[in-house]
Amino acid sequence: MSTLIQEGKTPEEILNILAQGTEQILKRSDISYTCNCSKDGFIKSLSALDEDTLHEIIHEDGQAEIECHFCGKKYLFSKEELKQIQVNRKKK
Ligand SMILES: [Zn+2]
Image 1 (cartoon, rainbow, N blue to C red):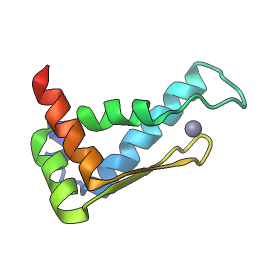
Image 2 (image 1 turned 45 degrees about the horizontal axis):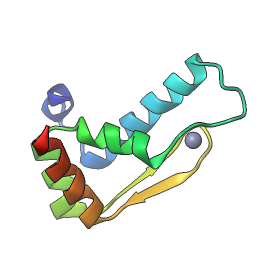
Image 3 (image 1 turned 180 degrees about the vertical axis):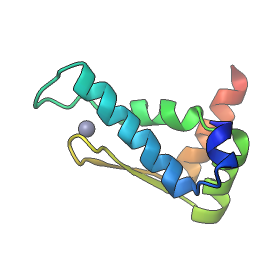
Image 4 (image 1 turned 90 degrees about the vertical axis):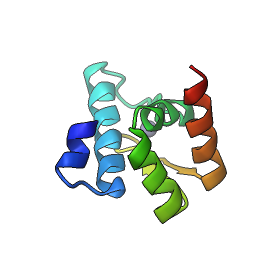
């Protein structure tokens, strides 16, 4: 993930990349028309972001909206939810 920052990607672009990654996983597993995306899945993606990026999203955007590129479902993460992700992963 740190290479994305070095390339000067904005948090929005990174979220987009995360969503596309999910799409590829879904296509590969051949789920056809049933999309198994879940908010939990995107929470895992967000948890994988480095501290600086997560901090930037929380403090500059205040929220994150991730659209599943497979089924078009949108998941909105509020500032509180993003902070929760930040706190939870530190416990590990
Ligand atoms: Zn989906």
